[in-house]
Amino acid sequence: RTREIESIADTSASLASILSIDRDKLRSQLESGVLRLWVAKDISQDQEKAINDLDLPGIHLQKEEKRYYPNGNQAAHLIGYVEDGIGLSGVEFYYDRLLATRKVQQQEEQKPLSNTQDLVLTIDLKIQEILEKLVVDIEENEQAIKVAAYVIESGTGELIGGAQYPGFDPNSFTKYTQRAIENIFFTPTFLPDAFRVMLRDSALIYDQEYSEVGRLPWSVLASNSGLGRQLQLWEWLRLGEKSQTDFFATKTSTGKTRKKMTRVGREDVSFGLIPEVTTPMGLLTAYSTLLNGVGERSPFVVKKILDIESRQEVLLKGVVTDEPIISTFPREPISEVRKLFESMSEKKDSSSYFLRDQILLVSDSSGGNHQFSVVDLTFVTIPTDSHELNMLVVVHRDPEKISRKIKKGRRIEDILDEKVERISVLQQISATIADVVEPEYMD
Image (cartoon, rainbow, N blue to C red; front, side, top):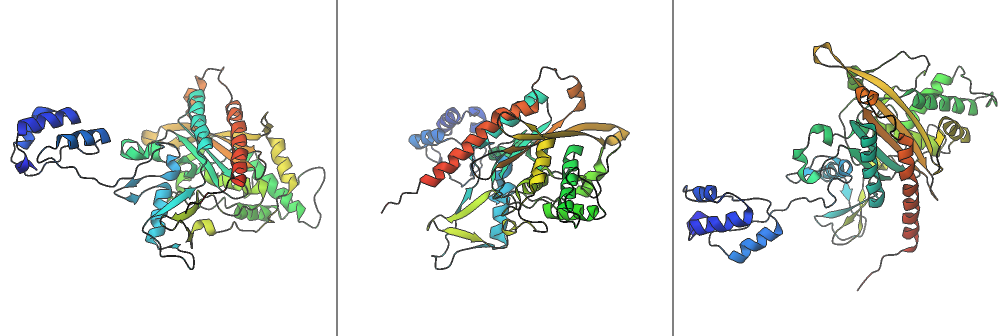
């Protein structure tokens, strides 16, 4: 407040030294006749202390609440970000929507809810660090445009971690391009042939399992009801629906993506009604369900909500995580489907199975030119003591860079195998600790 300043020259010199700003410019601004001037925003605690110690007349500090993410870009695409206190992406957006639609309720016989709650997430930070390193390693090895890797627990649908390259820091999300902020796990993509063959043949196995003829021991054969069973399988696995989670909401449709992008080459294999396009998150959920049976929920990252004052759990009503997967098929998986998957996959030293395939896509750009891209998908089963973990890795590459790539580069499967064994061990250790450790309470 300029009228309270005793010496503009001394004040300008002191502030310029602490805040690392131009002294002459600040002095000119203070002498301009303005009654009030914002000198700096988002200053550090050290700068705040230095200014307070000087006790300069006319210089005031104002504190404002601001969301801060201590882990920076870790799991940024899951957690999301806020602007002006409003969640715009990820869990931030989803929870704001719950509050706005009044879908948060307290349990019976509890004290009234306070104004703030804690979200307890399913993310394992140690596994998250491995995934963050994984996507960077794959990007460097493959010279990829985009890389993403997500891990879910098959029995519960809990999302253990998810990382993407390029990433962003939610503390300063405005500095990043839309390409970095966009979550490619919810961007529809064409499925490579190996993944569609797995779906098609699984439908045939189910068809023979519940047909009057019964399962034929020597092969998988299509029957007259095969297409109907494929459609049932599609609906059961929700491959034709938008992915419903508590950490993302999308308005993107598969139809729009299909018009912009087409696959290269002619299809020599008949896939019937097996979908051609889905999201990576939809594919990860579908394969996890196919191999392990119907999960408790759709993928979710908010494990529970605790009221800060009472520390009691807050209930959610009418939200997507309460919806069970449609049980058109039996809850228990068929062992032959698992055998089919393992026969199509590569088993590694970590006892994990890797199903990998890629597809070349072309899109029309302005001027009639064509842009090519390669989408590489790898689905991984990770054994644990209880429910296995399932991981999907998505890699987007430029075909020109692939042709110039050094042949001595490691395979994606080998890079993954190094990380998968550590993820398996960490998940089992985490579960063991949770079984023996109880919270301590103090009077």
